[in-house]
Length: 287
Length: 275
Image (cartoon, rainbow over all chains, first blue to last red; front, side, top):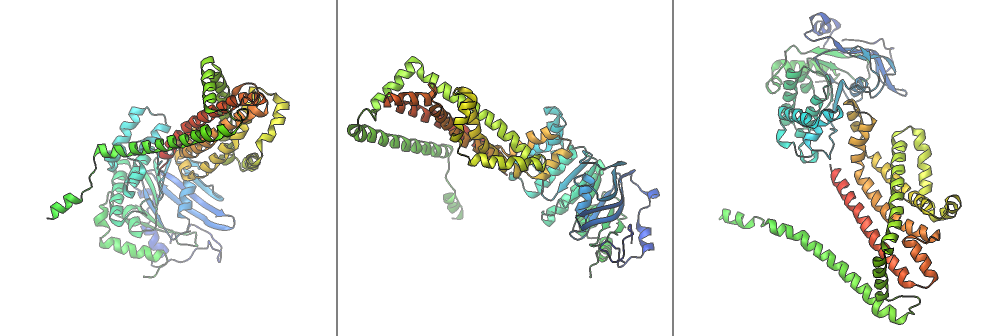
């Protein structure tokens, strides 16, 4: 149990013992700052709290995320996963505690962050090419240069042939790929992804997960990935953070397999199934 | 056998045939218009005119002769220019004010919306011709009064449609543009205006009708001597029904053309926001 809180016993933020793990065992699995293969800390939450009125969503939440790390957050609805992403993006402000990105406290929306959600934010009146090029257009990159870069990104994510189509003419998978291309052109070094592939069918989802892993291999972006799918969390994440409902503590698991992983085969391995069982227990679920 | 069936079942469609369909529809629509106008002309020419004194109802021949006379001596251009410029200027001022205030009411501080929205709800409901005595006292009977009257008429229509359109904008898309480094101007030009183009087009189409009607109405009620309304007003005093009906016909034709322009804009706007 990686407990980061001093919650009051009996309160909704009080920690609880999680099954299958002792504190000692957890410590051996957590990456220590000294042996981290990643860069400096880019996201640092210290005693972070957020509440809607009396309804506490996060309390005394502590988490450090290193540059180039993929951290998967998993937990039941309402446990604060998306809230944490919204706090990092600067969409909402903490009610207590501190949150810094690149060493500076989060104050409003930051262009160092890109945010992808299940419901994409593609603009329906623009073609795929114009949607992808939007971040460059905002930065006043000349038309020819931005189209060249946008075409290269569309090629990279596999939707080059659809550059003239509008979003409503694209499948769900193509829209996700297009959103990824646009995020990559945004030049943000932190990708916040809130169940981006949740509405995609299972086979295509694995392909998109592989695409994300491949893109990470090329770009080494820092990715904070929220999901309800344990397999997805294990296959993508360098670290999986399990956030059980009604507690400020969380359970942390380092996935000891270097990236890039072959998502299709990795998910079938015995090791993954063991981790799955362990994290399922951490979620407080019975087998 | 099966191949033969497939060949027979295949839909037959050629470029010529498919392009002929809209042409046929257009001809059919024009035919209906021509028929409708012919019936109206016949009723006027052979039913109404023989039974009503020429003092109260001019014949079609007299009306068309009057319009032809106006065309030759430049009166037509002068009248249409006066009324259209009042309508266009009034619409422009009304649209700029309506769009700006809709942006402030929707995207500005809540207090701004709290003040602006009830004002426009009242302005929309108000019988606006009742403002003419006040405008007459404040600004006189000339062009500025009429332009302001048209602006007051169209402003609530544009405001209310814009507010409705702006409420459909997904806040996540606003955040997306801001996260990419976009400021308020880029949010407005790359998201809000394209997103609300269909709503604005509809508002402008409705406003176009109101603008011409208000300009002509204002000219009549202000007792103007220029513009299409001025011609109707002054001609009525001399029982020149040929001039009154002639000005009415011209106003109807230009109003239809004016509305048509904005209908095209509205269609383009709607097609851009499909999704």
